[in-house]
Image (tube, rainbow, N blue to C red):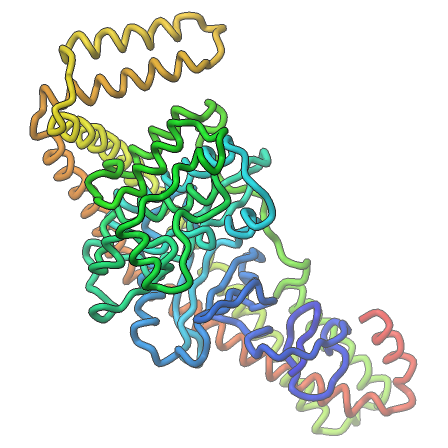
Length: 553
């Protein structure tokens, strides 16, 4: 099969140049290239391939926007569990809506029944590739670690556990100002509180180098399991090595369950004590000895970060456009070809006695181009209305996500306070402690010309701790109340997602049907155009005209 290097039209014969734009054709082995998925995603090139799926660079034909499309390998097309995993990845990831988690736009099945997933196109590198190239500074470790923890915090707040946190699933992109931005990807084996188990008893899916003891022993995946995996990732980021190394699963199982990791400072002396302590607490064998949640991890890393690093950033907003050849350009090319064929028939048969077959083929070509233009207009209008609704849904997700975040941070403080109380930690007078800490923070900000300093950040952190003690003293059941509020917000988001799902499916079905008709028409136009070209090309009277057309494309 050959594909046009400019417009991605597919040719099954030995044609060397594209009929529409004259560009050379490339021989390709991947039959997905040049196809249209979901009626609107044109597959252009391979970004990467794994054991179960290939990720392609694709262009949204109705928006000329570049995307990434993940398609399962053909031999997994009949695997119901893998299909469900991809569907779950789409649903769980799309609902999270956080700057540190990859955006999912769409999912479905190809014409031959293979599931696919459409997501934002990320420009950058997996953290694993970055670590293979160079060592990270401590400031970079703190920065990237905070962002990973923020993404996990949002996922956990919404009841989603990733279950496969590792450097390969942490993508490092950049913001508009060039700052590194983390994106968590591949929620394919994530579990939500409402999901049923998809794996058989005793079956482990994930990466044993980063698995928590409870995952290895019992297959359990609470949020604290992700925190353990984060500890493994941070350990490698600081030291360049994994906390435990083995050649087989049994070795990792024993190490994660029984062995104590070497203190990161022994392998990298400049590692701050606070960072080393956090990493070792994340790697605690018992979940109860790890930080109470991902918000706690963010707070601890924030103490080591500058105010600029602690700021939340988003991936660059630069529009990722295509190659300059979109479907509109292609339609213009078809219209020009119809006009050229009209001129050819008139030149070769000036008396209007062209062969009936050629007249019929040209009439069908003209009608097909007209229909293609009408379908394109209809699809663009439908997609624009759909995009507007999706933006509204995204705004709702972000709004509810912020509400969830606020309650979850309060819950984190309450959990920390309850744990401190159970451990018998001394609690100073609640009222006086908060008042004193608040006064310190207020004093730190009295001078409007003062710049953020370590003292300022420490004062804010003291206020946070004292507020936790105040919560514990005044709301002994505070954690339970906040957990109730959090679940109520989760349920509100779930109902919102369910309400739009059916409407979304209807709109996408119309777009897909429209896209299939456009694709079939396009294939017919290629056949008609190639036939007309082949019949007219040998005529001597048209030689100069064809030479000019071939030269200009």
